[in-house]
Amino acid sequence: MSTVKQGHFSSRIGFIMAAAGSAVGVGNIWGFPTQAATHGGGAFLLVYLILILLLGYPMLLAELMIGRHGQTNPADAMAKIANNPMAKKIGKTIGFISIITATLICTFYSILSGWFVSFALAPVAQMANQQQVSAWLMDFSLSRNLVFTLVFIAMVILVIRQGVQQGIERWSKRLMPMLLIILVAGVAYILTQPGAMQGLEVLLVPDFSRIFEADVLVGALGQTFFSLTIGTGAMMVYGAYLNQNEDLGKLTAYVTLTDTSVAFLAALMVIPAMYVAQHNGVQIFAEDGSLLNSDTLVFTVLPALFDTLGGVSQYLLAIIFFMLMTIAGLTSAISIVEVPTSYIVEKTSLGRDKATLLVGALIAVLSMVVVFNFNTLFGLMITLTTERAQPLIALGIAIFLGWVWSRNKLINTIAAQDGVKADSLFWKLWPVYVKFVCPLLIIVIIMQLFTK
Image (cartoon, rainbow, N blue to C red; front, side, top):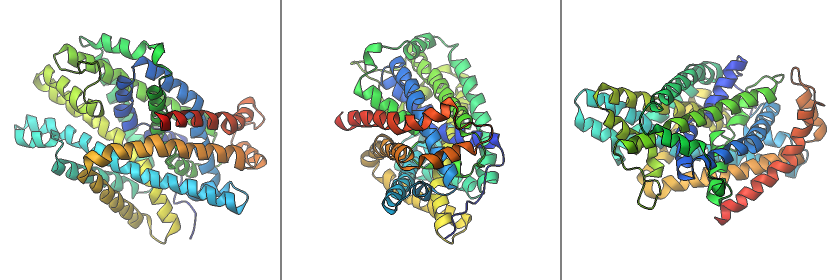
């Protein structure tokens, strides 16, 4: 079958918005504050920022470089950089595992994002005096989870089936600025509330004794990979939609900076909000000092905080916040669902419309299995994909780029970029860094992961 891609990004800003949208998602706005609150606030933030610089940026650049060079799906893109049949098979396997990982991530991601849609609608029901409807929308019941998981998957499919420029790029350009505006406004409001400064101190003043704790390191690594969608194949797919002459070093820096800024802004809103809620009488911590309901932090703490405000503002803030979460979920889910979709489009005779519907149906079925076995599978799926598969796939990518890809061919790919000198210090160091330092760092943290 043909391995010609179905489209390209029409502009640099279109790619940045789409790639940043892929990176900026529930992982930033739900995951990051939750992880930071659970793992010592400032200590977690410090480790996360160091890992973004030491691992996130170089690995994101590696994925984009492989995808852009291959101009095809992750499995074939990984195989393309190998020179012998055995290496090609291994590369294809790593790429295919990333496609499977992306599909599995979609299961819990669709459930989680479905919650955001229902929580955004609940205040509307309250304002319309539909208390029973509102209670159902905010209740973690089987029926509510089934309905809104499917609603969210349908939203993603509607965007994906429109293609790269008319779907992914157009909607990313609309949704990303909206997300940033809402987030900045949320931070500005929360920081004016009584109790917020205590949360700000927890976030910004690190407890250095916690920096080398296994849970903090593992949580920060998982968050780094999950946040930047490293190891899911999404960035390889987006790299394949880029023109060959774009300067990937700069583009990757823009995407990483946007992603990290949003994660920080989200923590700047959610963690102070916890202490505002506590100031208003909402119980946040257990007697032993641990965080209550850490997995559902934004679904318990923030609605409780909004309720204490009273008046119309409690409803408006709830609608705005959960709209923000829905947008974040949508921009990321679009990129993750595109991974299996692009593979099917290339490997079969199906058009984009049918391939998208097929992938949507598969994700819907898998998500239903998780919904019906929620207590067993939801947490397991998160651990399996974000804490186990993504770091291992990233290790495979680092080894392939550093050790398998012919140095001359890699240098030629680097030199093909506009305004880039392959013999500049950055482009001399980056391949060596990915070859030696990245695998070592990933192995050290994976060892912590499997022994914790």
